[in-house]
Length: 308
Figure 1 (cartoon, one colour):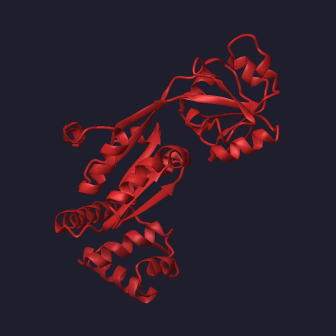
Figure 2 (cartoon, rainbow, N blue to C red; figure 1 turned 30 degrees about the horizontal axis):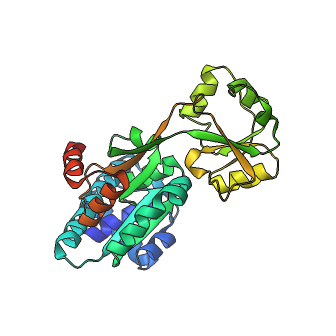
Figure 3 (cartoon, rainbow, N blue to C red; figure 1 turned 180 degrees about the horizontal axis):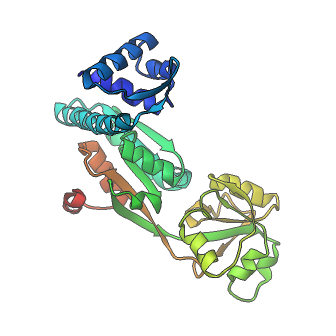
């Protein structure tokens, strides 16, 4: 059994069973990948893939267990590479952060600027997605750390550290009727106006959706986006009021919009930094985590002892 055979299985599954794409990602040929798969199946004496003619269309029942084992092996292989990078003192490596657009746009820049200056030879990748995608990238090993809210804290394979708390605000044009209210805005007040918000804010078990459900009120969501800047653009077109993270409002750049606090309506959320429990943490990753969370090295080491 060879490591390259395991990589072939892993890459085929993660390429939606497209052998050509898997071969391209592995920098080899399609016949070469097919041969490695056949050799592995002959050795383990089970069929790993379901076939439709010459096409691979899924995993067999034993194939699912084989794939899970392969995923664990490749994660450990990556850990070995991280250990080597960490102690070779070459000052080189790759650091991948998975995060949401709001974090990447409004909270990461200061830490990223610091990191690039301190570690100029480390290649930094930032992958953007919704919280579920961020969680999946950390669990699979595609990302070293993930920064998001809610769902990343629900995965048993990921250890999380709190970064900061935040709430939501409304943004609306200056002449919007909500500006004339002589009282605190209520959920009923919100529900009579079209709302533009994040595409995941009203799905699943998010705190915002829970508040509306508990009040038996259905919000009038007319448009969703993952980008707060897109939300604000459509609010400026008078298509609705925007419900965004408070950090996404810039009093200088967003002078055409009025911010309205709704912290009395929704509970605060905590942004979490997640890292796989079995990941070897390289020195530069450790430094970044400390910088972003504001933890001292000693405090961070003590917290990370709890990962396992």
